[in-house]
Length: 163
Length: 289
Ligand SMILES: Cc1cc2nc3c(=O)[nH]c(=O)nc-3n(C[C@H](O)[C@H](O)[C@H](O)COP(=O)(O)OP(=O)(O)OC[C@H]3O[C@@H](n4cnc5c(N)ncnc54)[C@H](O)[C@@H]3O)c2cc1C
Ligand code: FES
Ligand code: FES
Image 1 (spheres, rainbow over the protein chains, first blue to last red):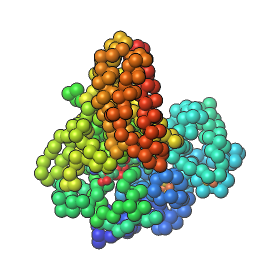
Image 2: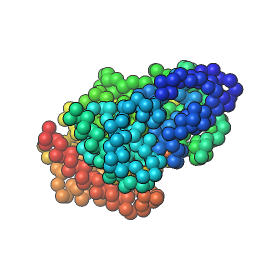
Image 3: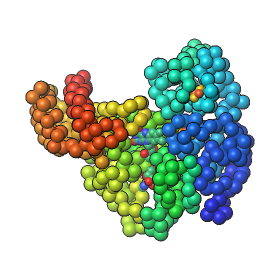
Image 4: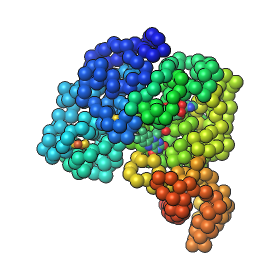
């Protein structure tokens, strides 16, 4: 990272497997960078203060709130957005279950839900419905009432554990 | 909303942090996990001149056990504390409390030091550190200081740390064999900040509570050690009489504040209910051990 002026800095990071170098404003958060600079508009912004989870992205292998991390902090980091997660087919089964069970209506929360659920699925550990709800407790959905989302995650988990 | 303008420095050494803190004082803000700081910037509730990002300072990382205490580096993430075998084995109170802290994504980034330094009155970790009699280690250009938890939490988001100091680590005495820990809280929704909560660490011998530390949080401006209730409990068998005495003593120990979650009377009531549940659980735990 090189500091240009006080307001901007040059960063290099890997986004969905591609190396990118850009000059960013230091006050810009990661999702504004992903959406505005890289046109990766799958990460959504609901509240911009950590409450809703629509902005969830994977940084350094774990899910984080993209609105609570500065783009400049992502220098050197490995970032995966919903676009990358989809292309890798890591959650293709989960996405199919979301469709099958109507686990989305407007779809605004869906990328964040998938990014978060992906971490639960990747752990390879079984989880009760209660634990699934707990795991997703930081992601708001204003349409579905959550039940169908829990169904979809539970079904995917079961299918994976049964191999 | 978007954050206001600020300058940003990624600190490369503690000395650089000391220097910047000395130079900017209250206009500088240390950026750890950012899970509390960045929301306040995005909502424009705070407008620091400069953010000092400490995320690459390796000496602030890690959790380790030694000489009767566990060292938790300021930058240990909540998720790391939650998964740590050292914490699970030596600090069961903290292990029990951690699942109540926020949600997965916030725990992946938020830090132990950030939580303690911020001193949110509804936060779990300050209450645990106080219940276990931990020590906060702060450092600055003027040197290093160790501050007992009892002297550290001074009020609403107010601590004994000076603006030119950084919290570097927290040392928490290993829970002694024969002691039990219970952590209880009430929140509107899993992962939300508590409306009432209690961190309890006790030594129970047979049916007698030899000694207990009770720390209440989320009901007033800081985590509160309930000295009256602790005195009412010490050396007593846990029965209906003791229960009434302990719950009665809480009226003097606590001075709950009304906030959006509820009124003072409701908070006092909830803390009393939690007290009964916590001691029932502590006695049951001791019997099972
Ligand atoms: C949706 C949501 C829910 C949450 N729920 C809970 C909850 O239930 N319980 C809970 O306890 N917390 C909760 N939090 C807050 C979270 O735990 C934060 O991670 C934590 O309070 C602050 O840690 P941080 O590392 O993110 O600190 P930051 O946000 O980086 O910093 C917070 C403050 O502490 C200062 N600071 C940070 N580190 C240091 C240091 N080493 N030395 C001196 N000063 C320092 C900063 O300058 C800043 O003023 C929640 C947050 C969100 C977004
Ligand atoms: S936009 Fe990040 S949590 Fe709502
Ligand atoms: S589907 Fe509309 S917010 Fe979840």
